[in-house]
Image (tube, rainbow, N blue to C red):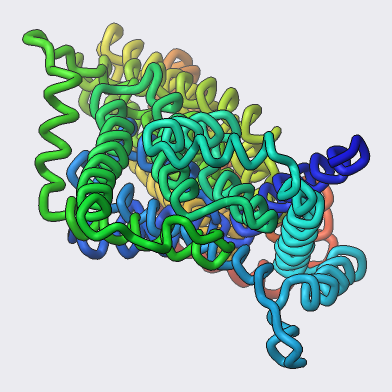
Length: 593
């Protein structure tokens, strides 16, 4: 092979690796985190877990990504270590799908229909369709499909280029000598493990081996140990992801390593013991791409069938390696609150967005609970409840910081249009949740002042506040529900209720002035009442901001001011009817208006 042949081979390798990466990214964006959600929920049965692990890995084309995701699940407490074993085994089976796709490059036939199955025949067509989707379609899913098709075409082009470039190596004695050396099981296994550890993809390393088969110099005797080593080398990614994780997460990475090492040792011992007796003649034959795929799949399926019944033994072995200490320190509640924001999930951005959304929903509910607890303190002050309000407000502040930092990192990933919308929604809303929590502290201050001064509102003022609080309680529930479920119908109900709450706030303050003039209330009570009503009204403003974010981002834009302006300019009869309905529902006590 001359200098230009080497360049061609390296170019083919670059295209091959880039195509695999591009296709994986397209598949991940198309799935939008849904596959990972399925993994999270449906892993109670070991057999089902294996099938799910295989299915998800076959779709996203990366056993490393699946295993890293599982390490993240275990680290976050979403999944138990025993549930993770089946998925890890299934991931090893799922990754063999790539080798079967790549084996199509070895098809040789004069039949027209058989030749159509050869990647060099159909890849250009897929590339053309993919490019058309990317250039001319505005539909996000079609663009993702286009990315997958182009990635696949580049992958196959790289594979064909590599295969063509390495063919002359068959006549180079030094090259064939190196391959003969790999027929030694130990050396072959080490070579496969090292190559896979470096490029961190067993699918890619198997593809490179399949390309080398084009030389005709790779025998099955050399290929089999290399394939065994490739299964061990792929564990490096999961082991690296376990650094700094919880003990169970590191154990999950070890289960992956032990599964592959034990499976490889059993296979090597049994296979080469039989070979010593039977002498398998095919070991001296030249391997081809299809044969590599058969060996790769057979080993992983056989290893899973043998070791699945002993999955608990693998867990025990991992637990023996990483032992529990005598002193167990429980994570504080605030640390458990952010367990879903695991950096390992950034490798699968669609799922990471889902975790951000769930964490933001938890934040919203915490802010609501803090506010409602502080409202209860206005009537019945309790030191324990007051302390909880402070703790909840501190935790909401932490939520804002943690979510903001995590989403900055998430913004550097390849996100689908829907996921981008979701991140925009979260960034707009977490500030409002934090401000709602701040108002709970303001209400707590009013409750403390009332307790300190033995202040009691008049019966009329209490009745008015009860109506006010009920309206705020409803608008909070509507806004949070709309945010949690992207419910546009509920979001559209928030602004009419907010308008009614504005009117209630005005009337409460006006009625207090009348009572002050009649000597029923004092100025000091008026200051506290004004603070309470102002905070309640501002809570409804933040609920309005949240609802508008849901509506506007659903429309692929964000202009809160423009939305409100248009809403009131157009005199929408539906909007007016909802306002009137809420006015009837939240009427202040008779004689007070």
